[in-house]
Structures are given as C-alpha cells and as structure tokens.
Length: 399
Image (cartoon, rainbow, N blue to C red; front, top):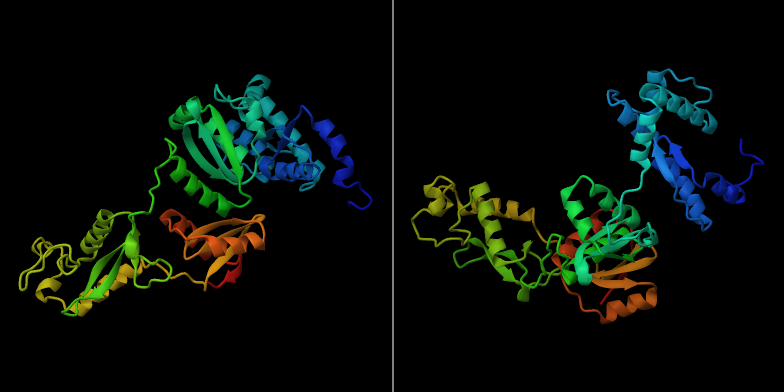
C-alpha cells in the first residue's frame, strides 16, 4: 500500500504548512498526535497545534453512553463505514460524527465545547508564554519560585512542560493549585534524561531548597534501626542501633529504618499491639519476674511474660513480623552503574554517588565519592533495582 509513496521527511514541510493554524482532530488523539509530533521532532520541527480528542467530545456531549470508542459511536449514531481501520475511512467517520454533534446540540454549543476542550489555560499573572514554551517536554525536575526567588514547589515528570501546564490547568478547579499558580513568579528546570535520575534529583532538591509547598522530606542524620540480640537469659530482644553504628548495605539483622528513636519505638509498640506481643519482653516497659506486663492486664498480650506461651513461640512471632521490614544487604560486590537515558547513575551500598557521562567519570565517582545514606533515596533505589531497572545494571566495581 505504501510502495513508491513519499516518506515523511519528503512531505513534512508541506504538511506543517497545511496544518498551521488548524486544530488536530483524532479519536484518542494523544495516540495519533504522539506519532506525528515525534516525526516532526525528528526533523527538528516543533509541532504544537491545538488538539481535539473526539473521545472527550463524545463524553461531554453524550454522557449517557457507557462507552465512547469509535465502534460504539458508529453503532450509536448509525454512521456509514467506508473503510474501517483505514486512515481516510476513519477520518470520514469523524466528519460524520461532527455533523451528528452539530445536529444534536447546535453549532454554537458545539463550538463552545470545542473551545473548552482545546482552549489554552490562562497562565499565572507573572508567567509568560515564552517561558512555558521554553520548558522541554522531556524528563527532569522543575522548580516553581515565588517572590525574591523563594522556592515554592519542586516536582518531577517524564514530560516537564506538559506537567507544568497541568498545574495551571488544575488551577481553574483545584484550590491548592490555584494558590500555587498565583504565587509563581519564575520557573526553572533540570533535564535528567531518565526517570530514575529525576526521582533521585527531586528528593535531593527538596531537602536542599526546602520549598514551602512540598511535603517536607527529612534528612537521615538521626537514622536508626532495630536488631535482635540475645540477653543473658537467652531471650531475643530488640536493640536500637543508632546512626553512628549503622553499616547499611553490609550489616545483617537490621529491621526497619526510622528517622528518630521516637519513630522506632512507636513502630515497635504498634507491632506489639497488633500481634499481641509482650511489651516487657520487647523492652518497652520494665520486666518484673512473675508479674504480667500492662498489656496482658488489659488483654492485649498473650502472656509470654508470665509463661502462658513459651519464649520460643514469642520470639518466632517477633522475627516473623520483623522480617517483613528487614533491611536487605547490598546485593553487589561493590559500586554499580545503572543506565538511565544517556547517563550512568552510580550507586553503592544503597547510596547515590552521582551521575557519570562515561567510564572515566564513573571510575572517579567510585574512587573518590564517600557514600552518604539517605532513606528516601534508598527507597527509590530499592524499588528500581527490584523492578523497572533490575535488568539495567551494566557493571559492578569491587572496592
């Protein structure tokens, strides 16, 4: 069917001229528009028309329909099919659907609905269109600033311009976004090339710049974890390991990671209550020989403190619960590099060492960087290595 036909590059300029000032109409428009936009981008042409999705149009005008795919629209509105799943045939169906819409609601209302669907959102008063247009629709982090360059909000996205515009779109209906939009005086962005790098950068930037509207992320300077140690009577008891003695990544028998001693004790008390463990045996209250703990007196402990269940059973229950929160050992011999976009993310012992563009930079990071543990970044890395990036570890470096 396409034998002897021109390739996209040969008709791109002519097509761009034809489409200038027009509205791009398609069913599930994001799908079709993505291909056209990518093809133009490959040639260095920035294609940004107004886009009308006829799925959204159908939902607005005919909300009583349970579905709005093209086959349903054909059946519901008795459209005439000339060549289903062919470009011109399906385009003709959309023209027929447009005429049905016009007949059903009138031209004036139809155009008002179209304006609603394709209209550009109003920008914040201190932000101009040129600044928004300059934001690349690529992966990275963006920073909203208020007056006097005060950081307001830091976010990450695989499509930064689209995400920024979604903030301004939502400002029309969401009070939180409205307040943010009114305060924005400037926008900066940092491209990362990959989503994992954007997640790590977002976490670091929020801690460094402390924007006023982000959820505050805490530094890990008071980090602690539980470990199980046997006392002189042979009872396995949770012992708190503070940040000075933590050797994360190489230290086995660590459970949970907490920002403070208070948080760690709160966690232990919560599992004791949920699993009917003895708080006295856990060290949360004084253990007096022959006397039950307070929780037993209020029927929230099964009585290991007074021998109603044996210590081995109690210890097994405790280990079973704690194992759900065990801190894993670093699964590599040394530092590793993960390919993320065009960059290498260098990691060691659950710590982020930095970004490298080549192997020389990578070797330098491994040799000179001092791993600094951050709980939020640990969670990001752990999730990536067990999921989306588990097959992207390209090298391992012993130290």
